[in-house]
Length: 164
Image 1 (cartoon, rainbow, N blue to C red):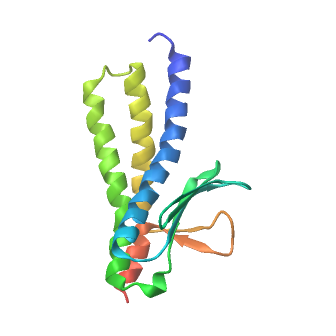
Image 2 (tube, one colour; image 1 turned 180 degrees about the vertical axis):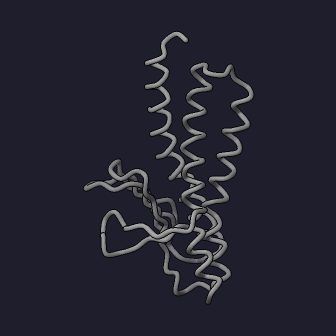
């Protein structure tokens, strides 16, 4: 295998980029369902930064930071929405991640195994598969900005919504 070290580095770059872009797609899944099903403004955050890149697209606000890029959140006033609407919004993120993961996995068939394009796609596939597992695994984890605040994975949030 020629260029083994370069290919390993390429995989690492694709994995890190795949995580950032995968979290963005996951949160866009939540945000787009929230925009369609509610009349509220929706804020999407990926990573954190002292001065994040901010975009305003109608009711959608996007804030992109580089630190803590493994984390993302979609914010809207949940108290104004029915449990049914909230369940759809919760399911939007894993659905978007599932579509991207399947698409990346299927695209691997079109390229030479261990070639440059294949390694890049495989890194993005692994990153999105990790995001999907994290979203579907019922767990709590601390908010990276506020240790006292607890975030729920999508599946645990969905499950607790069922108890209401």
